[in-house]
Length: 108
Length: 118
Image (tube, rainbow over all chains, first blue to last red; front, side):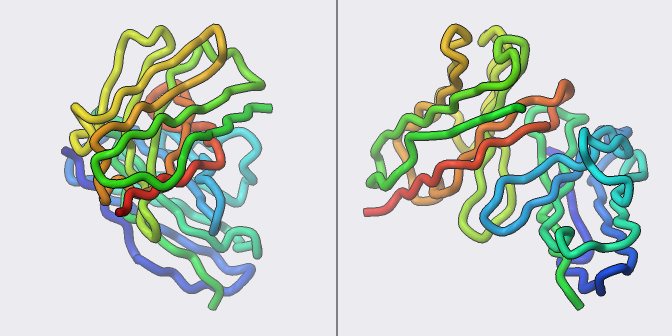
């Protein structure tokens, strides 16, 4: 089973600053990675799929990159509504569609 | 607008059963593969089960295999999860999630809480 790891566990960022979140796969998964945002008490929301394609309605300040085993999600200028937990998920080897443990982005 | 509304959660004793449902609207349900994903309190996300649009291809996480059964009714735009022999570690919010076309999840319901406790 593919293991997904995310770093850091918590990222403290000031509003307006850039945030870069990392995700690593235990073996090559091509570009089959999605990123989700989850706010407290809410369901996850798809941000990025295929490593770099923004989902419908997702602002351009969110971008994804990477391939094989190393991936990143960048938020170019953090807005107040972006403070949340972010999960990566691989779907190259299915099933199961394994998630990373998440990175919490909080206010510095 | 895609809408997924889960129901059927609640408190159940270890060894008991529960049936979750997900009502879908705002899209052509019969054309989409569907999933259940769960989240234990304060924890991350765990994929639970997948069913294709026809109901013929089904997968389960090892943690629930043999105890949970996924099904769908395309005539009623509904997805179900029959959960038997429940354990404390099954306690979680269960989300119904639409497949985005390649085994990622592009729409989620609000979730239903299942608590397994004596």
